[in-house]
Amino acid sequence: MTPPNDPLDLLVEAAWTARDAAICTYSGFAVGAALRDAKGKTWTGANVENASYTLGLCAERVAIFHALTHGGRDFTHVVVATDTPTPTSPCGACRQILWEFARNATVVMVARGGVTATITVAELVPLAFDAGALDAARTAVRNDPDA
Ligand code: THU
Image (cartoon, rainbow, N blue to C red; front, side):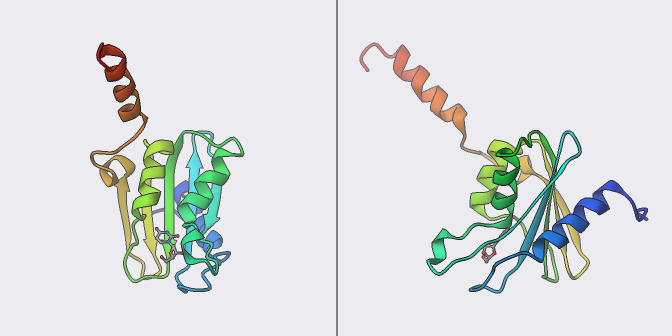
């Protein structure tokens, strides 16, 4: 059994608190996210929706963009909290951002129903696209005398 003050429990609690700030006017689906960085600092976010639906942002990206622009780096854990019976995993767009900025993190998905699931970012993003592909293309062009 997990002790009450287990550090990950605190991160889970932070994700639930973040979820309370969700602005999910249109979907009614509130999400809280909490990241831990290598220094042990916690960064949180919640999803934000607006009338022009597609402009809204998921909790994970709100949290990570806030962290990145305030000095957070080298994330070790990402907690995603939802009011669902079973865990909710990050959407495709968030997976891409997690891959690029939180590649070594473990994702912990907690559901109001009490079920928790854990997976690594690397497992969530097989065959990821990233700057490596851009670099490889540039190198290929440089090495091709006809290009
Ligand atoms: N959402 C998140 O914030 N994170 C996820 O992992 C899945 C989806 C948000 C986006 C939108 O505001 C609402 O949930 C419904 O899709």
